[in-house]
Length: 318
Ligand SMILES: Cc1ncc(C[n+]2csc(CCOP(=O)(O)OP(=O)(O)O)c2C)c(N)n1
Ligand SMILES: [Mg+2]
Image (cartoon, rainbow, N blue to C red; front, side):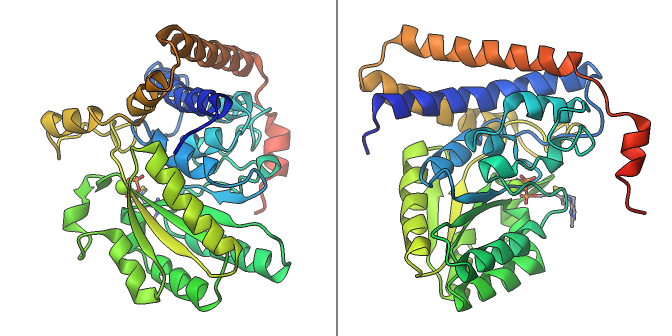
């Protein structure tokens, strides 16, 4: 697959932005500037960027509790994301939702969900609405390997295939659900193998290969768009950091982590660009641009107000 120079530049900018965003968040968390918890997707950025570039801007997306890269790939305003994590009023949910509740209807991002599983039937319901309204749009739904063991995953996939809904299910198999490895929780070699039970295609993809992601999601998106129904894509990848903020990663070895780091999706994309004629300095300039903008986003968020207590109370239902 060959990309235009502009697309390649744009994709690298998104990959760098996703990585830098999370590195900054990690650092601010350690310094006590961010409260609650956050789930970082460092190492998994290729899944989000490859998948979203294989769909149209007006296609829909639903995300998971580990969703920063999805939001950035789908062009959420990074300043508003930073505000959301830092609890500031300009955030997507006025800073009251935090990392796991970013939703941005403007960029067709129908949001994340901190409760694992329910986003799958919600996304399936959105796909049903798209079909009923005869919109020529599809939805892609990201979730994890552990989430594919929940009951609603199976119920939703059955319905989606029965009704030939325009949805692409993307399971990010990052090898662990919290501290438990996928081998200990999934009874088949590949999560994509489960698709056979619902009569839909199941595709295993190297999630650290942006091009492989684009190809698989592109095919599945076309299939969904022409009315042939859903596809289950399993993107094999790895989360480099802990599950959330209190995880010391005692359940796996540093050697295993090093093996996966050598397969870094961003490094592989840089190698493609260098082969395609980009100069090292050009890549460095793209990095610097993403880094500078992230710094601006942090400064913007730090200077932004916190929602008033009265307004916060007015938004509580009970
Ligand atoms: C219904 C429900 N049960 C448990 C949790 C706690 N929990 C948060 S993330 C997670 C593991 C998810 O694993 P996976 O689907 O592989 O996603 P990953 O965290 O690896 O991205 C669990 C059990 C939750 N959020 N919701
Ligand atoms: Mg997982």
